[in-house]
Amino acid sequence: MEIALILKVAGIGILISVLNMILEKVDRKDWATLTTLVGVVIVLGLVITEISDLFNTVRTMFQLY
Image (cartoon, rainbow, N blue to C red; front, side, top):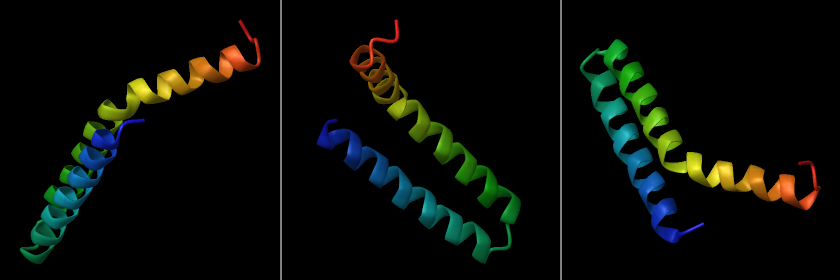
């Protein structure tokens, strides 16, 4: 896993949490929930290849296929 990926995920997490706090202060809880959901989807999109590589490694290690 590259350090750049970790920093991207951390940066997105910080940005989403700041947006979430701002939106909750102005009483926009529905938008805060939506931004949190969008952040989760973006991070999942970033790490999906790493998760796929992990499953392939486990499959190879235990000779499942």
